[in-house]
Amino acid sequence: MFKITNYLKEYKKESIIAPMFKMLEASFELFVPLVMAAIVDTGIRNQDKNYIIKMGVVLVLLGIIGLICSVTAQYFAAKAAVGFGKSVRKDLFAHINFFSYTELDQAGTSTLITRMTNDINQLQSGVNMFLRLFLRSPFIVVGAMIMAFTVDVQAALVFVVAIPLLSIVVFGIMLKSIPLYERVQKALDRVLLMTRENLAGARVIRAFCRQEDEKKNYYEGSDILMKQQMFVGKISAIMNPITYIIVNVAIIAIIWIGGEQVDMGILTQGEVIALVNYMSQILVELIKLANLIIILTKAAACYKRVDEVFNMSASVMEHPTGVDLEYSEEKVEFRDVTFTYQGAKEPALKNISFTAKRGQTIGIIGGTGCGKTTLVNLIPRFYDATEGEVVVDNVNVKEYSFHQLRDRIGVVPQKAVLFHGTIAENLRWGKEDATEEELERAVRIAQGNDVVTSKKNGMGEMILQGGKNLSGGQRQRLTIARALVREPEILILDDSASALDFATDAKLRSALKNETKNMTVFIVSQRAATIKQADRILVLEDGMMVGNGNHEELMKSCKVYQEIVKSQDDGYSKKSNPGQKEERTNRNNDKQEDGANSKMKNHSEKTENNGKRKGK
Image (cartoon, rainbow, N blue to C red; front, side):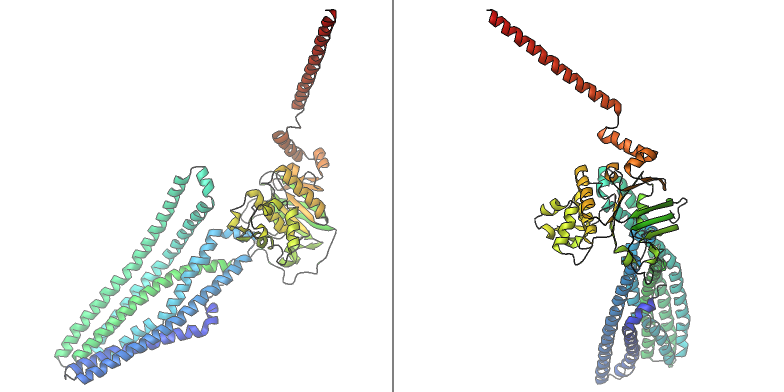
C-alpha cells in the first residue's frame, strides 16, 4: 500500500522544521493584539509618544521575526514536497515498468499518464500546504481563543460558540467534496484519453472526415468535466461566505458585549480591540484552513487513484534468483499451453504443443485474431500461460529471471517503435556497448543499408519521436536491426515485415537464414510467401493449432493452410488457377500460330514475286 509517511521519512528533518517554524510565526502573531491593546490603553490614552514608538518597534520586530520564520518554513516545506513528489513519481514509474501486458491493458495508458503527472502534482501540493498550515491554523484558532479568555471570560464565550460552528461547516463541506473530486478526476481521464487518441490518430480522423464528430465528442467530454468541476467548486465556494457570516456575527457580538463591559469599566478599549483582532485572526486562519481542506480533498482523491496503481500487483512475477543457464538443441517448447486473457470468456490459445530446435526458422500463420501474437508473447513472458508450460532450453520460463530470459531473446513487435535520438542510439537499445561494425552488420542483415546511407549524417541522423521522419518500411528495418544487434539466441519477428515489398522481404529472409545460423527465428506473418521456406510452419485457427509441418507437408495435409496459400496466390499472382493458365497458354499458342502463318504467307509472296521477275 502507498503511504505518504514512508516517502516523507527521507525528508524527516524538513517535515519537522517546516511546521515548527510556522508554529513560531503563529506564536509571535498571537502577541500582536496584546501590543496593540497596550498602545491604545497606555500610549494613546496617556499621549505618551515614546511608549507608542517603543511598542511600534516591538510590532516591527515581531513582523520581521514572523517573516523570517515564514520564509524558512516555506522553504523546507517546498523542499520536502518536491522531494516527496520526485520519490513517488520515481517509484510509481518503476512499479508500472514491472507490470505485464495484462496490467497495462487493464489500466490504460491515458489513466497511467494522468496518475503519473496530474495526480502526483496534486499530492505534492497537498503535502506542501499541509506542512505549512496543518499546525499553524489550528494553533492560531485555539491560541486566539485561549488569549481571548485571558482578556475576558464573558466575551470569550463567543469564541466557544463560533469555533464549533465553523468546524462543522468546514468539515461538512470537506466530506461532501471528496467523492465529487474523485468523479472530476475520472472525467479528466476521459478527456485526456480523447485528446491522446485524437492527436495519435489525426491522419485517420482526417482521412475519414470525422473532425466534426471528434470535436463534438471532445466538447461533450469537456462539458461534463466543466460541469462537475463547477458543481464541486460551488460547494467548496460556499465555505468562504458561510465562515465570513459566522465570524462577522461573532465580531458584532464581541463588540456588543465588549462595549457594555467598557461602559461598566470591566474592559478597556484596547482589550476590546484585542478581542476583535483575535476573532479576525481566527477568520483569516479559517479561510486558510478552508483552502487547505479543499487542496487536501483533491489530494485525497488523487491519493486513492495513485494507491490503486500501487496496489495493482504484476501477474507475471520474476523468479528471485533465476537458474543456471543451459543450452539445448530443443530451444523452445510449448507443452499443452492454454492462455486466456483476463476477463475473457474464451481462451485465446488452446492446447498448443510444439518444439522449435536451435537454428530452426518457425513460421506462424493464420487468420486475424487467431492468436499468433499471443503465442510469441508467451516466450519472453509478456504474459504467463494459464495452463501448460513454455520451456526455453529445457527450463520453464517462469524459473528464469527477466534479464536471464529476455537477454537471450530479440523481439520485433507488430508496431515499429523508435525513440527520439540518433539511429545509432536506437540500435544500441539492443546492446549498449555495440561497436560500429556490429551496428553495420545488423543493418545489413535487416536490409537497412539504404536507410542509413540515404541520411546526411548516417548513423548519427536524428530520429524524431516514434520515427515520424521515417517511412513504415524504414522503421521496420531499423527495429529488426535493433533486435539483431544483441545477437539473440531467439528472434521473434511479429509481422514485422508487413511494410516491406516482396523483394526486400525475400532478401531479409535470405540474410537471416545465411547469417544467423544458430539463431532460432519465429516469423509471424499474414503472407504465406514469407514463411514458405521456414523449417516448420504452425497454422493457427481460433486459438488452436490445426497444422504443424513444412510447406510441402501442409499443402498435403492442412486444409486451412491450403486455403490461405490458394487465396493469396489468387489475389497476387493468380498462378494456381488452371483455367486462367490454360487460357494464357491458348492465347500464346494462337499468337505463335498466327506468327507462323504470317511468315509462311510472306515467304510465298516473296517466292511468287521472284518468279515473276525471272519470267520477265
